[in-house]
Amino acid sequence: MNINMFEALEPSSSTSPQESPYDPLPAVENLPLPPTFRWGTATAAYQIEGAPSADGKGPSIWDTFSHLTPSHTNNENGDVACDHYNRLEEDLDLMASLAVDVYRFSLAWSRIIPLGGRNDPVNEKGIEFYNRVIDGLLKRGIEPVVTLYHWDIPQALFDRYGAFLDTKEFVADFEHYSRICFERFGDRVTKWVTFNEPYIVAVFGHHSGVLAPGRSTATGGDSATEPWIVGHSLILAHMASVALYTRDFAPKQKGDISIVLNGHWYEPWDASNPADDEAVQRRLEFYIAWFADPVFLGKDYPDVMRNQLGDRLPRFTESELAQLRELAPSHKFYGMNHYSTKFARALSGAPPLEDCTGNVEELSTNSEGRAVGPVSGMPWLRTAPQGFRKLLSWIWSRYKVPIIVTENGCPVPGESQMSVEEAVDDQFRVEYLGLYLDAISRGVFEDGVQVLGYYVWSLMDNFEWSAGYGPRYGITHVDFETLVRTPKKSAWYLKETFEERRKTQR
Ligand code: GBH
Image (cartoon, rainbow, N blue to C red):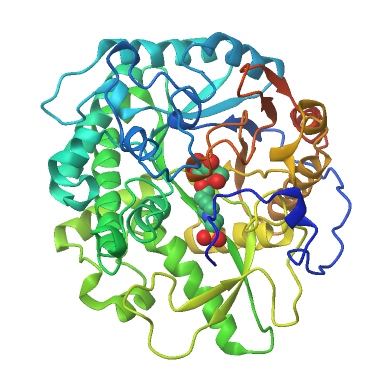
């Protein structure tokens, strides 16, 4: 597929061959959720803040990547984005009006340490901004959940040593950066996420090159080795940060720290072919267990990965493995980003050197030409709540860690072309969210999965990485000319549905 996976479907294409037949969706049942269940909205710094050099902020790889010529980001960039940096109070009030319990956001490393490194100066103005965010949330009774890294490493670290490609340097700098954050914010923040979606950083940043820093074999990188090195660095940096927090901060601050992993669910392309069933499991292990086995089980990489990749997959030393084992139980939640389901088809023959799927083809229709569900505003994202339910169970049974759904949502078909009046009437999104919440309810009450909370992606329309301002994932519409925010129907739907669903005791 040579379309950009982050690109929105235009209305014309959502009615054309893309629309394959699928089984009709069930109606939303508004099934109950546990009374202690917490809901929130999620964002990431580069996607909303703007103000890329305000108050001493240094450039990140996304400031660089979004200004390349020719553009890799639809001729758009995050220079203004939602201007959240200057509209903080308004956005906090918006969340309060929706009665969210939680706000998940990320810190821009280069606001806090403009050059990024462990011997570089700390920028007090950057600290001040995030203090305002945190205090403003607490004042409104909203819990801050802080992601340390959502894709925007300081450019200076990339220039110095290639960022994640130098494992030792990166681990030391990330550990230092996380220490500064725990010291300065940990008195008020008690839920931390080290990395958002290491898979995407490794593969989309260093294999396809669709995302910053845009590396691949075609652009001077090495897609056969770099993703695995990057993944290894991220796991070791995560462990260093968790070790530090658990030892020096958790006893006083009493918080939790974990990681956010994304992944699709997969159905076999040909349900009668056992090879495709195996492809499903292999694909899930290459996507999710790559990170989750070391982090949550304290184990080496999955055998299927070692067998296929051999020495291109870095090895943990004995003492690293011992530390992984020791720290695995300190993870009190599993951060799960999930959007959709695909079909997995076993490829025959030896996997190409640059394969990072487990030798599996991913398709949006099965061998009978059927899709998993109706397509959203993104070609890869279809409404498939039954796949979500299965993935909740797969994760729970393998890792036995309570799950927080840290991202879920979708753009509406044709939304990028709509007027604000049309966009706020987002029935497609309301139905998607309703069905995915029903799937959580079934996961909890029928399958025995522990799910603690649900954070919708996203609080508001924002800069969607390589697709710029095309795809809109917000429950709030943003007019990118005037920056006016208008909550969509889905925002009020979520407010009301959580009020109702948590009342219904079982
Ligand atoms: C999340 O990434 C990000 O955390 C968030 O910043 C982003 O805005 C949001 O999702 C919406 O994209 O599987 O190759 O067919 C999600 C990463 C990007 C992974 C698209 C799956 C589908 C293309 N996803 N990708 S593919």
